[in-house]
Amino acid sequence: MALTTWVHVPEGSAFGVHSLPYGVFSHGDEDPRIGVAIGSYVLDLAPLAASEWADFASVFTAPTLNPFLGLGRQAWHAVRQWITERLTDESYRALVEPELLPLDQVRLHMPFEVADYVDFYASEHHAANLGRLFRPDEPPLPPNWKHLPVGYHGRAGTVSVSGTPLVRPCGQRKAPDDAAPTFGPSARLDYEVEVGFVVGTPTRLGQRVSVDQVRDHVFGVVLVNDWSARDLQVWETRPLGPFLGKSFLTSISPWVVPLEALEAAMIDPPAQDPRPLPYLAGKDNFGLDVDLEVRLNGQVIARPRYSEMYWTPAQMLAHLTVNGAALRTGDLFASGTVSGPEPAAYGSLIELTSAGAEPLTLADGTTRAFLHDGDQVTISATAPGPDGTRIGLGEVTGTVCPCLPASPPT
Image (cartoon, rainbow, N blue to C red):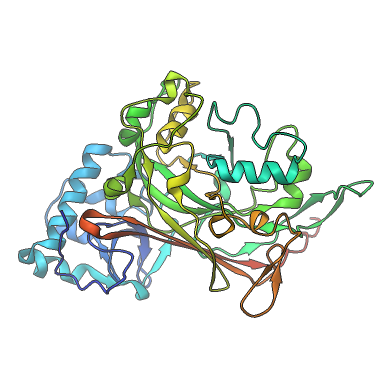
């Protein structure tokens, strides 16, 4: 059922009363703390909870969401109900209104401390597109791709909040015709449009999470830009996979949208052939109807659709833990590039430009095979809400800066 709020929410706002994403903010010289976005405001949860002597008030004074995430699913639901009631019941207005701060007057921070980061490769379209580009004489998908969600373990320490400058990475690269590798700034810098899933409830070592337990462990979602240096990546990837071509920066949106807010966006999982092994099946296996948009220097260049992803969030989590790997509060696992069957839905420049062979022409007449210094990439997304409403997932943005010089010897 669609709710109404006494808070003024501008038409087209990403954050109506059905969204209520959590983030970390600071106001003036005050310490960072937890808030919820509503319209063009952030609701300061710490003083509101303290004024009502709420049992959970202390977690909102933390500079990270991790203490709240660790409370578990029942607490997440109870707090969401508490916030929703205070933003929809006029009788709470006098109590709540003083704790609404204009979003343009606060600074947003990294919303949670990332414990571990895993990036998957869950889009059949993206995997096949890259397979055709790089292995034209082989089948587009590797033999294991439709049997398990392929992924790699990324670098948690370089997952950063939206707006963090992207310093062009340096590393080894070797063109096919070069006799030997060279070192220098990446010349084939790319973005990847992804959706990330934030783990709240941990598990012990040796414990496996089933497909039907995803809601017990995943708190919410963020938007992800998995920046990629394609020239570094292609030289290093075989035999062990992505490393320096990925680990220099991964950007996430500052707002974590609760999984509970996306109930209306949950759709039947995709048809999968061959049928996955039993540990990748379950009754509560769902896809997500999320529409994404990527803008390069303000110009929309693609609109990928998450509904076309092959592997589901629950299957990714089940596979991540099937060997007994423990979950920790603050774990982040991402979907891999979200792509569709046509260029308008491609989620990376390497696909849009056929690995640079067919540069993209922008509205100002310039072309891009890959990203230039000064380029800004912004990813945003929306999803269905109750009774025809839309849920905003916010946006993640980053601007490319020149490669930094090497540090002098000490």
